[in-house]
Amino acid sequence: MDEFNVYVLGCGSALSMHGRHPSGQIIQYGDIFCLIDCGEGTQSRLNQYGIKPFKIEMIFISHLHGDHVFGLPGLLSSLAHLKRTTPLTVYGPIGIKGFLESIFTYTSQKITYPLSIVENDIDDIKTIWSNDRLEILTFPLNHRVPCNGYLFREIGHSIKLRKEQIEAHALTVDQIKAITRQQDVLVNGKSIPASVFIHPPQPRLSYAYCSDTRYDEKIIRWIGNVSVLFHETTFMNDKEVLANQTGHSTAQQAARIAKMANANCLMTGHFSSRYKDLLPLLDEVKEKFSHAILAEEGKKYKLRSLVNHGLQ
Ligand SMILES: [Zn+2]
Ligand SMILES: [Zn+2]
Image (cartoon, rainbow, N blue to C red; front, side, top):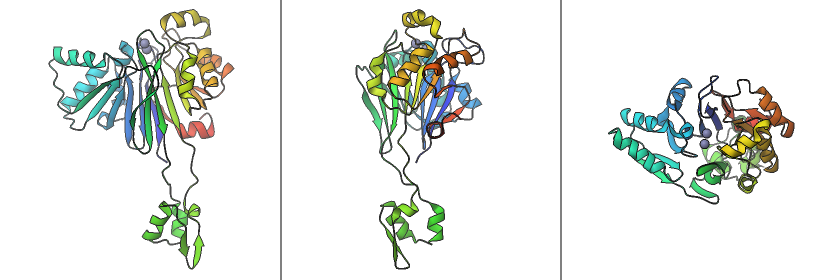
């Protein structure tokens, strides 16, 4: 199976405080690198954490609030200065194209590599990209401005061979090819099932990104049974009224969504700068949903480990 990892670049909300920064995450699936949201300073944190921005093929922007998008013109401009030649696609809500084009115009920035900007005006879930291993979907969130959630979902199964068994039976290249087609092979006149040489299939993984959003049970139909749910938890429970007014969620509300969606693991984030210590917020989440973690900047989360082994 391909590696399926999330790198947290920014877990804060509007202000950079307490060592936390505005939103940004890298989703790695095998050799595919995607960036979700690009708050101010995302570029520096990519460098800091040793992730090459050239690897990024797709960028997904949730909405046009500054803490999710102010780093994007800088990143796209840097890639031009660095003479990127490979294509890059930016997906986002209506307005993302005008936002970027006006900045490029006013700053006389020429984008010299193939850049596509795709606007999604959605009221239901929609597949926006897929190959034979992964599909990426977008769905609407309930915020103060149009806001798109994203769902990354594994499809199909790649076959992982058991090298020690292949060596022990001294299989030929043709026999290995037969195994990858799940055919049994004949060794010393004895038929051996292909399953002996293949690791058992692992469950398909999925990752949903829900930020920014107020509490809205409507999203459950789209993120049901998700492996890892990233749901914003801007506020602690006593700020429920403020959360609703500002289009955000509390700890308990995120936990309720995770429970109703039957998520395996809940990753919390988009923390308000009013909280220096986040452990009380995590405690509130865990009162309602125990398999929950805080998104921590600079950390790489292996989704398969999170789901298989519980908390790391
Ligand atoms: Zn935000
Ligand atoms: Zn926002």
